[in-house]
Image 1 (spheres, helix red, strand yellow):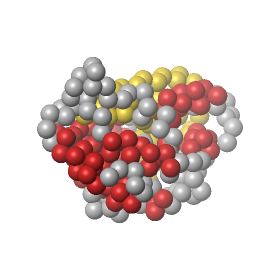
Image 2 (tube, helix red, strand yellow):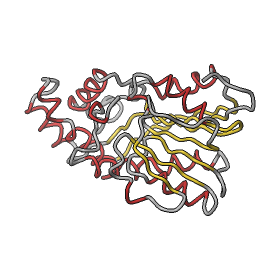
Image 3 (tube, helix red, strand yellow):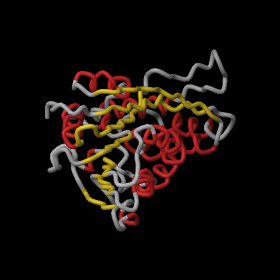
Image 4 (tube, rainbow, N blue to C red):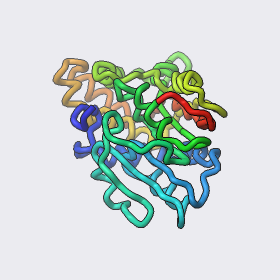
Length: 266
């Protein structure tokens, strides 16, 4: 997969604002699960698909001064500002790029694997890069378990444009249910201490509304060009987001697992 294949490309003018909002909404959840691993000074950590870099920066603060953090992305344009002692930024393709074996105490990836057709092979690669006893934290959406239901709450309006975004992602090979599958896949691979928790997000908060708005706007040309939504419907949906709309974001599954001392398949 190349950076150009990613639906929400970092090169888009909207990308930085959308990634900042994603961090604002989900970073508190992510930090909760990373803390469960016991992350401590001296650890070696890898943030895969580091995006805007907020979690890589947080990791760096937790493992300093002796620890190391590697932050990688196919398009690391938003990570350059983070590069400092013990926090290395690198352009890297997790699908095909080289990676060390048994080198990290903690590896984290959020909203990455669902976008990769080779997601299970990438999971194997990340496990192989863990030290025996190292921790893997994978967070991904289950976009089909929670759908707006106006019968329960009129503010849960069904937006055709949001459905069109899901159709676009599906056509690009995104697995919208991958978050639900992660725990089972890790169990099949012999990982231990597996804990999986799903969180649903419903809010009138402006950050949630703006995130949903930017998600639509970032790909609106593609949606219109493919005829997945009409210009009139898209305009109507964006207007709806400005008046009494309750944002329902997909369920986020956070899965924490540990590599046992025994050798796993690679």
